[in-house]
Image 1 (cartoon, helix red, strand yellow):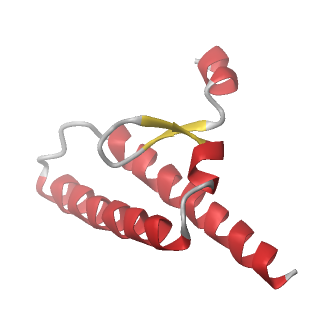
Image 2 (cartoon, rainbow, N blue to C red):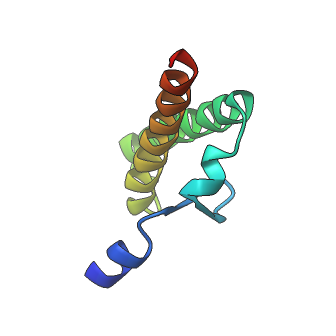
Amino acid sequence: TGICQTACRDYFRETDGNVMKASEIREKSQQELTTTLDELLKEQFNLRMQRGTGQLARPSRMNEVRKDIARIKTVMNEQKSGDAS
């Protein structure tokens, strides 16, 4: 797993499961990032509800979604601070 973490560091999965480079997410517009963030937040809520009722099939998906949300927020903040400069 350590090898994959190093080799796959600039990749993440979109809500449809496709792997995307971090450089590609930086090319998205603010509106696209907001839409993707909203979808991930809804998915995170649904996963929490599934976990609460004992229906969660893939617990690892919760960590993936949480990290994807953090990545998108990071890029959004980078873009915001870049516009202010």
